[in-house]
Length: 180
Ligand SMILES: [Zn+2]
Ligand SMILES: [Zn+2]
Image 1 (spheres, rainbow, N blue to C red):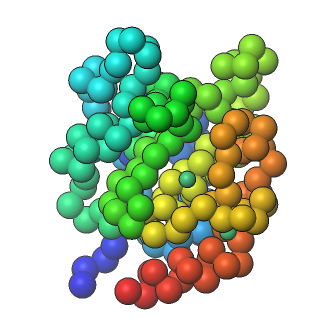
Image 2: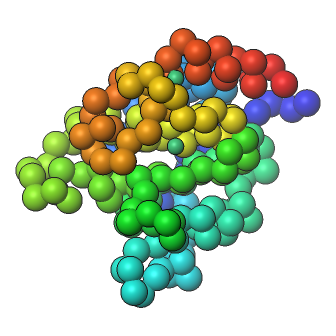
Image 3: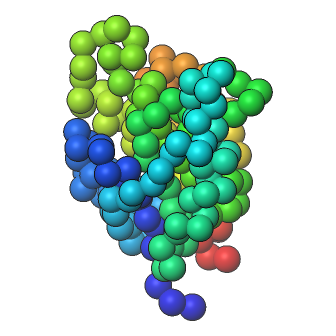
């Protein structure tokens, strides 16, 4: 077995985020070497004109074709508003036990709620949501521990109420998954 990497694929227009800070947090949590890449991806095919949002499940399907060869997991970070048909929006989505996930900055920005920008808060929210979706790709399901990043958050306040990392139980599950 060759070396396994987590790839964080930032859509190329995302200049405001500190990708290195995020990379370090991911590496520390998931214990796999983590790489950052800027990615060019045309999201227009995934735009729903009625909802004026982008279909995240379809983006994930397209992303599978663009995953770097050495990627154990690949997480795409975009700034467009995402949806799945049964929900009004999603912060992100991932394949449970699969290879790919996606997170959007759109509703993590204070500006979305007509509040002044807060870059530090944006980073905390983004790290939580990246860890959440990556957790799903390692087979983690939603957690009942409110402080755990794997707990469900249907709004940004719930994201803010979570802690920054996996709870003990989820971490144990991850460690077992990494050994497989
Ligand atoms: Zn989830
Ligand atoms: Zn947990």
